[in-house]
Amino acid sequence: MRKELPKVYDPREVEGRIYTQWEENKCFAGVRDAKKKPYTIVMPPPNVTGQLHMGHAMDSTLQDILTRFKRMQGYEALWLPGTDHAGIATQIKVEENLRVNEGLTRYDLGREKFLDRVWDWKNQYGNRIVEQQKKMGASCDWDRARFTMDEGCSKAVRETFCNLY
Image 1: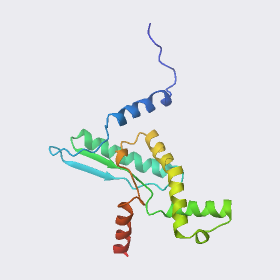
Image 2 (image 1 turned 180 degrees about the vertical axis):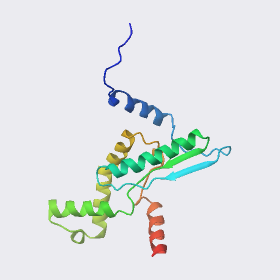
Image 3 (image 1 turned 90 degrees about the horizontal axis):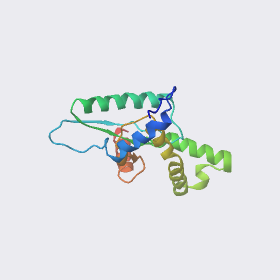
Image 4 (image 1 turned 120 degrees about the vertical axis):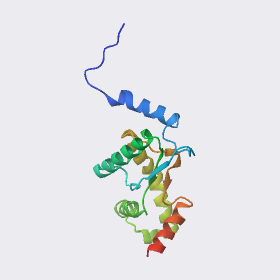
């Protein structure tokens, strides 16, 4: 008995399953192969504000196209993802949430407690951004994703800002 093709394509029936297979088989992993010329794109990380917008979608699509094209050309291509660049938009969201819901400012909390709130925000909303990018089919090596405030990354960001200043 042949199964009839549906009249309308429903991406939810297919794309999530296929993307999961790609991830499980490490199709996007950047494994150094000395026989191949490397090609890397470092994703300008989206802010951890809760959702992507059309600009993120366009930017991610172009990077994805370039990475896949280079893979097809035989390069060892890596699209390295991250989340939150410098924390500015995340800080604004956390401060707004504090003001609206608790009547507080970051100064009321102090530096350490405010940083705890930023990490809480990242833990609550950071994965939402990644999941949205996965639904767009982003061919990133998600196992290597970094958050600006992660150990090592934050030091590099601080040094870069200080040197540029």
